[in-house]
Length: 388
Image (cartoon, rainbow, N blue to C red):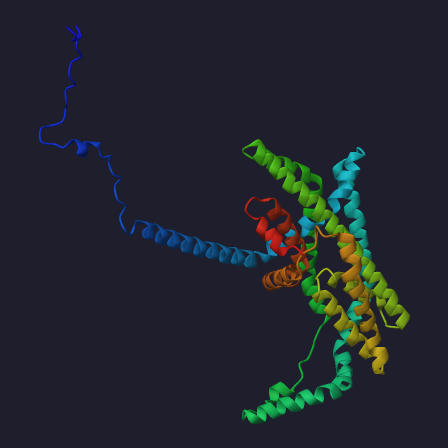
């Protein structure tokens, strides 16, 4: 009577007859990967990386070619952009005083144009005299450096004798330098057109610069992109403007000091060589070396003794050493300082593409590239590499 009144039914097994229970208890094993699967993935990844690098190289070469063939269009545009950035703080300060931007831009452009016309009118006469007297000056300069070049000529003749060559008659004939007034008349329309183009672009950049920025912000898709765009543009405006104004002030001061030094030494046309030093100093390293070389030649042409002839160049070298190693780094600070290696490579690239205008604009462009890459995600490494 111990049996339960309602006994539970025995569980019905769904196992087919003849199948072991242990077989069903074993969990299903994952499918095995093919032996060469990971290797194939790595190989495809390497191929894609190589294709991406090749395409990037082709794109860079295409950009360089495009920049080179559009030199006549891009050089005035870039020059006007940097001049506009340099003058924008003045117009912005006038706008804060309720002065219309167009009126402030007209006044700034008028003052700048007056200064340039005055400088050209003052320096054109001595510059033309130097151009006309250049052949005679070179002929007078040749006997002074003949003792220095005799050993080089002897070594060259000895080398040509060893290789069995001979000095050709065409190589012995000196190259003639001809510069006439017709050359100035022929090139004057191009120069005037370029100057007017740059002046108009600068004026419109000063007047409509803020509106262009506002339009660029409006087309940004999200608020984060809008804020990022404003941050980059404002950073470029502030830092590049301060850099250009400070660099221009330093170079003008260097030119005035050079002119005063040459006046004290009795060198003719000191303002001309001071202006040359001002413009050349916009090109780092190369400008100082070029001005030192020019002053050495000028000193050798106007002084008979070696000491007074080399004194202007030596004094200028000392001035530029103090300016480049003490004054400029102290005023500019570390934020806008660039690596000397990056500057030289950038000068080489843009001097090869655009010539002298490219060399003058190289450092401002490199400064802009540093500011932009420092704020772009994934490009901070480039800003770190070109920094000092």
